[in-house]
Length: 281
Image 1: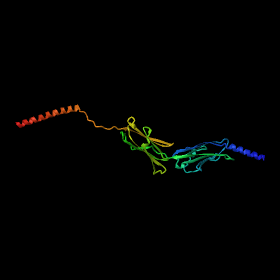
Image 2: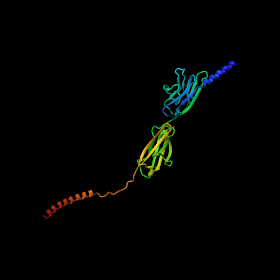
Image 3: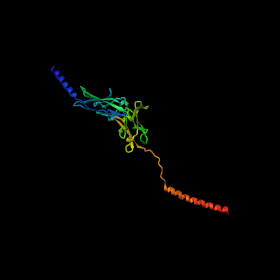
């Protein structure tokens, strides 16, 4: 009886010792761009135990395993959306390449100690995969110059993205008033049905207060947090009305015309006199 108690106590002591295996930190990005890469980090403290295996799962499907006693120690199980770079992966880091929409999901790291208890700890995080626009926001409809009371109308559009982008208009570096902004509108891409183009319109009547040093600065900002922020800026100058004016008399022109007329009259007289003389004779 006493011997059994000793065995149980030893097992409990061993269980407590092994349970000290800790998963210290899980480094999994919450947002990554489609076509890019991601590094998954799993830092653990064995606390006297011996590593039996480290496994990575996407949702409930295992895609990577590291077993130090095996040769080779690394195993990769093909999984949709998960493309592992074996050369850059180890017992603490897994590199994923060429991320796609299917790459989004929960990623779990599981660390197990050696026999006989195989103590196991795990933790997971979710990765969002964003489709980012290839360019910045595009603005149309603006003129180079505006007069007071002119209506300023412009459209700001961003190429297809996933998720939908957040567009914002600024006038002279200040957010445009809510009554100046119309939209946003979304247009699903024919090439990528999972993505949408975003459009936001600006419309307001120009006043003297809008012109600072004779110009209005307009800016459209596009954001897909936390991976993307681009903006397009333009400056538009104040146009002044053209008024009709009468030129003052040009003294030099009048003088020149008079001087030119006198020789012309003398030349005519020299022609008429000989003709009259011939007729009379």
